[in-house]
Length: 146
Image (cartoon, rainbow, N blue to C red; front, side, top):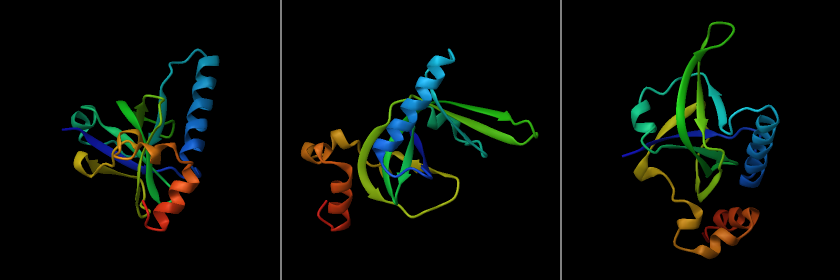
């Protein structure tokens, strides 16, 4: 069973914005001749690496709800120029919208069990929900209609 990570997407207001941000980083990497992979650097290295690499994803919390995920393909611990331990979370550069679920703020990242992870939006019961604009989905969820 895969284990996931969850993290706040600080400064990001929508899944669309996250997708644009990742696409911009991939375009920059392509221009520089670097591999097409999305990297997020965090201070702590997950101890449960084997479970995460068995199909885990990084779930992003955007504006108070779990809203998107990216598949994790590698964890690369390293020391920065000041000698402080860090970890590169290496992900496939594909942002997948998930069925929105409220999430309170927290610091750093947390583990997220497979059975607690929201389903992908395109795989959820209602295909019509996936076609809705994100602000409308958010408003309907806030009203308790989704």
